[in-house]
Figure 1 (cartoon, helix red, strand yellow):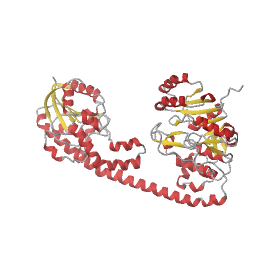
Figure 2 (cartoon, one colour):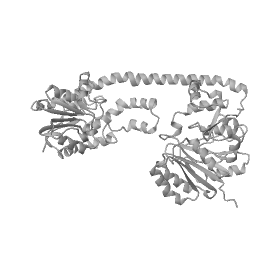
Figure 3 (tube, helix red, strand yellow):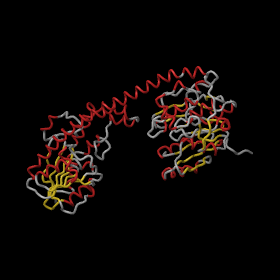
Figure 4 (cartoon, one colour):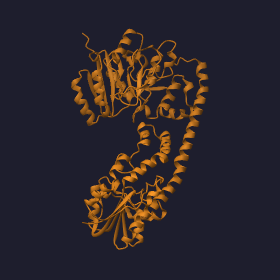
Length: 545
């Protein structure tokens, strides 16, 4: 009695913790598991992934879990699975896609009923969310002698193809030098020798948008430029990418199981088709080149020349802000002398030095040291690259500790305040300036009329994920440990700051100097500057308890 499975299902796993549990849930709903074996080909597994697999394995008799210690290419992994497969039919299931319960049996039935067919394929529904059905299915052509030409120049067998294991004796395996279109190359080689068959039902859901997905790695145009000339599809060539494609890939050789083999397939296109194909290829290449030149030119103008003007304005705004803050406390500081510590503010250090203080500074990022003023360059030598949570100074060393808008950037505010208290002299003064909820609100309002168009441009020029597009309208926090500006609006209330500071210091005076949006935002509420009841920052002048 033959106990070998009829179908082998290959699933390559790599950095898939977010999808593993749901993959097993979908696998549990899959019909016909008694006829199949499932090979989990696990590349460089993490402890978390192994824990999930171990939890689910006892529930499936059909699974073989194969650990591959080092990460390898997708098509090398598929070839490994093909070599291990015991089934007459082989199919694939990527862990971030979802197969419908009857899909595997429908494909196997299609191959049973069409013994000449080598590959069974079907329509899928692309989606931007895992497991959520897309609105429109892709309509792959039904294979026939009339439509065969489409399968020799375009990819149509989807991510859920099923094929007969026996065809590898004729066409070879997946070309392992490719990173993302090896199945397209495999489809053309199969179509040169065998017919295909399409199932009637939709097979599953393809996750089209995901960070780190192979199809979004930017290699597709290069790899297409290898496959097209390999099979005489000259009309789709991009001449501009040919040199790079030829450097990175072997057009006349294929890589199976880490060994090179000569490519011997002969394309079926006649000489006129191939020759005339150079005409549209020329137009395609010219269009691509113009598009790239326009993109780079506009990008340069916007992101480089614009930054020169923008940075100058930022520095002017920031200097005005710092002057307002410093003038608020300048008279008070004249009564002190000794050591001055500036936490993340070289501008205050420069001012303090002019009053006769011996200045010191700390800054975790030395290239971001306050107002970009040439006069402040000399202050860089007095700044140590350290964090406020672990100040490299002895106890009670400073007569003044000054932290302007740096507390919000501390990884641990409590630890940072504790360190400031430790290094402050018993008769010293701690000056802590923090943003208020109003500044967060101003940032959010400024975001839409002044920055949305810029970030939209950045998205189209530089970004490619929906997550980054969402941040245009739901912006991130402006440098604090919060996730969004909305959270800053709630956390930056004056009473919250006062409660936190009072845990470590005695607050002698609380001042609300002015409203100032962060310097990369225009001021759209200037009239509030003279209203002390509505301030964008609050200053605490403190001493030791």
